[in-house]
Length: 100
Image 1 (cartoon, rainbow, N blue to C red):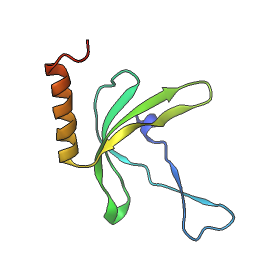
Image 2 (image 1 turned 90 degrees about the vertical axis):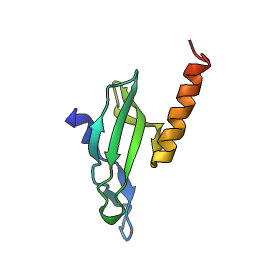
Image 3 (image 1 turned 180 degrees about the vertical axis):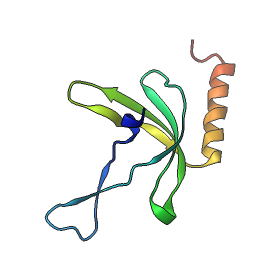
Image 4 (image 1 turned 120 degrees about the vertical axis):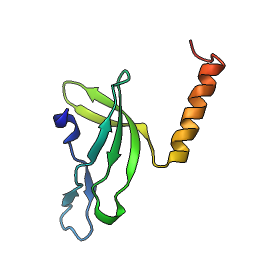
């Protein structure tokens, strides 16, 4: 799965001329969980120096004739409180049998 996680995003750089873009460093995959349909669940750490952060990333992974990679469809949870709130919500859905 290294080929799927090695894709880097580009971001506008400061001070670049003629529309040059500076590539963001590839994120470090701390742990990857089994896929859930078309979604990938990963704990990702940005490798951006002093502002590095670790997040839970749940994101759609698309494969098609002209594109393969992660899409913008997904969520990133940056704190344990956010993860606990999501867990509590999922438990309530299960307990109340809101989905079949």
